[in-house]
Length: 127
Length: 127
DNA sequence: TAACTGTACTATTTATATTGATACAGTTGT
DNA sequence: ACAACTGTATCAATATAAATAGTACAGTTA
Image (cartoon, rainbow over all chains, first blue to last red; front, side, top):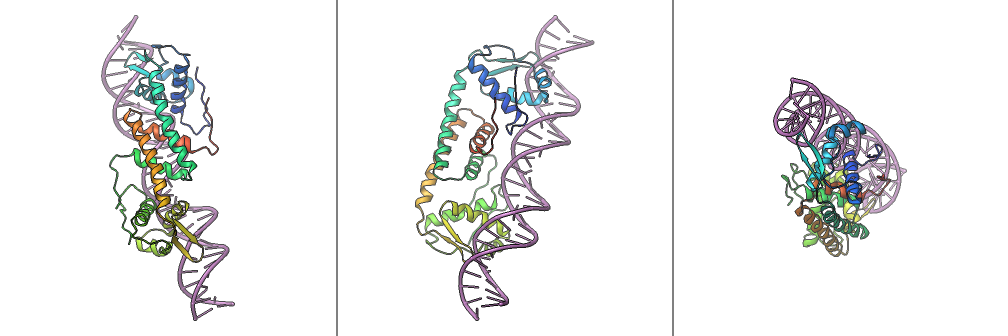
């Protein structure tokens, strides 16, 4: 059902996350359809159930999946909308990054800068 | 001349980099002014010369500093312009990121996404 | 109660970032 | 030519963070 590349630098959970999003967007999976359990899928893919869970939680955060403890994880009743909204926002980020790169800003610094911005947790100030 | 916070999570070279940019932008340092040598400044700050060099190289990449092997490192003749242009571009990136965060996109995913975009070097594809 | 489900917490492994040690090469003035 | 400076490149060591796994817990269902 899911194919993933273990040689890729892209984390397993990220691959899973994207696969499911793509399937939901393409209509391969129906709304409210039950996803395989974290253990089932984990075993099938040869990874730890927690790795699967991480992907499921990311999807849940995006309202693409909802989980019920004891019952299972399911695709959301209303799909596609959330996905498009986020894709739009991400494209905006991508455009800004590309523009910066095109103007000669080093990739490493952009990454550094992004990290800095995203870690507002107990961040230190400079003079 | 330079003050930096060793307790900060921000790398030394990053602090140095920003300090010098700020000084150049504020006119504290004049165009073509000679910067302390990597060894001098390294010793003064109690860090490895390579750490200073890293900051200098970042500044050189930004055309804020130019270095001549055997002679030294100097502030560029034409300052401020480059700095402002880049600041503008970075602010655009920051705005896009903030918007995404505000809409609920997880910081970790944004970071992941950014990494993905910036590493077009020998990157792996997903299905 | 037994077999499933998701979830939380903690370790372990792995990758990456940061800093340091060392060696090399160019410039300058004597 | 030489001594004392300069930047630079390469590699090693360390520190930090990310990714995955192990284990235990709690809810659901039949």
